[in-house]
Length: 257
Image 1: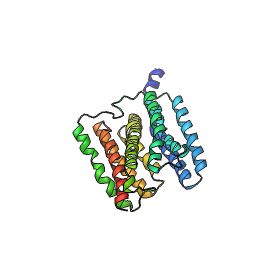
Image 2: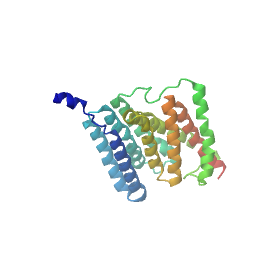
Image 3: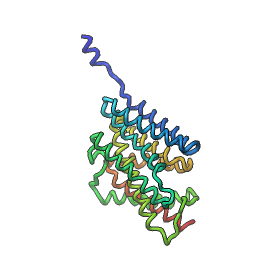
Image 4: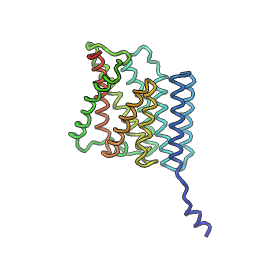
């Protein structure tokens, strides 16, 4: 009889607590890195990454384990941008180079979590709709530049424009694969539909070190793109939109400055 009672006990999922804890830890670490001691922040990010990966190995519940693996990509993004020796590289190309290690780590997470191509949104059923959705980036790019009223560091002249545009377009695609593809898939698997909030918030924290305005915009775009991916089960449209947004933003910085 007591065995039946034990089986009926509802053990709440640790995923919501883990998600809030990860968000708080990454927010504190990013604040230390951006506004305090970058070396201490780097060390804390490395410790956080190790804790997430090791903690995932101890969890038996698959959704919670996959959640930690997905969230581990956020520290990986910042560690890559801080640790790679890219001081003499143009900012746009440096951002693209810094995105390659997290993308490789993302492939490991996909394999370890058993995620399918469909789960991370690498599919497009109606290409014309994906293209229409992607064209939103053409509008958002100049609007964001005008709203920020400050050219990005290293804004190129028109004569040296194509390499930064292509590089930042690639950065946009990588970020969507990592945050709206892999990380959102693991978060939704563990938290349900509210899981789209976690990758959007983490993305805003990492981007918000530049300014509160950039962080707010990143949060709004992350929530919008996350909602679209959740409804359409595809990241193709939002990846194209993000790529065009970045490319047109850098184009606007050269034309309107």
